[in-house]
Image (tube, rainbow, N blue to C red; front, side, top):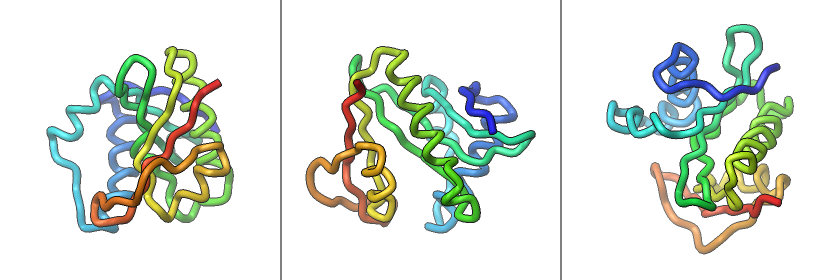
Length: 143
């Protein structure tokens, strides 16, 4: 498995969008629109690949000079428990640190809170609904 940062609009990016659509959007009856995808052009796009297959991904979006938001973390259900998500989290955190960010924040689906807690993320605030699912803001200070 290889972890890498990819370019917006590349073939790998299109594969990443397909994975995110399959894992995060379609099960909720949602789709991406052009404006959403174009808004990602300045984001840090991360994938985990094996050969030509994208096994997982996430996006880092700059909030301000010290904070980045992790979003669109996706690994297919059939690959859960194989360490792909853990590798993506560690890779994303290292990129964020290298770029000078001090904090990673996210809107975590409540079903994924336990996963993120294993990596030192803490719940901030109260539950809210996003894409029709309960979420919490989670945050981690990068050392």
